[in-house]
Image 1 (cartoon, helix red, strand yellow):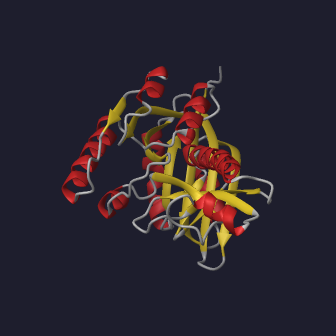
Image 2 (image 1 turned 45 degrees about the vertical axis):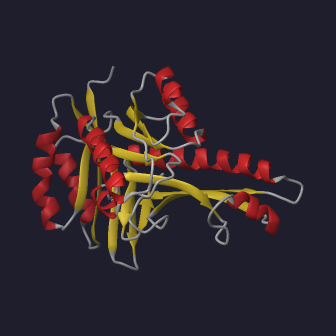
Length: 288
C-alpha cells in the first residue's frame, strides 16, 4: 500500500509564457511528484489547457492544496479543478425504454471497468426496476403521463431532489427520451452527458436506422456530448463509427448502432470521471 496521496489538477487559462514552469514549480514547493502530464495550446483562441496527476505525502490535504494554489490560479486567470484521484464520480443514470446503455454501464461498474458510483437510477417508465434491483441500486419511477408543462416541471423537481440527496457529480442520459428544460440544462452545465446516433444527419424523428437503410448509408455511429439547451448540439466528448453495407437488414443496423452507442457513452463517462475533459467554448479538449 502506497503511503502517498494522488491528486489530479486540470486547468485552462489564457496562453502565455511560463505557465508550465509556474504550475510545476508550485507542485515542487508542495512536495509533489508528477506522475503524468498533458497539455495543449489552442492557437485559434490563445488558450492553454493542462492536466497533471501527481502524488504528495500521505498527510497532504486537498483543501490546503487548493488554498495554496488559488493565488497562482487567480494571477494566471485560470479555470481549474484539483481533486483526489481516488474519489469516484457519483453518477445518476436517466433512462426510458431502451436499456442497452443502462445495462452496459451497470456491467462495467460491477466488473470494475468503469471507475464510478451509481447511487440512483431515474426513469419515466418501470421497465428496468428489476435490473436496478439486481445491482442493488435504488430505482426512481417518475412517470410522465402527458406532455403538460406543469407535469414536466414537477418531474424535474423530483430529479433535482435525487441529485441533491445523493450528492450527484454527473448526470447521464442513457437513452433518456425526454428533453431537459433550459433551466436544468444550465444548472447541469458540464455535468450532464447524452448519447445519440450520429452520421445520420438526414434522418431525424422515428426509426432513423430504418431511414438510413432505405437510403443505403455506409456509415453509422454515435456521439456522446455534454447536454445544453440546444438539442444534441452540446460540446462533443467522443464519437465512434461503424461501417455497414447493403447486406444488412434494418434490425442489424439497429443492433450495430446500439453497440456503438454503448462503447461511445462508456468512454465519455470514463474520461469525464478521470477528469480528462476540459471545456473549450463549444468544444472539448480530451486528454486520453
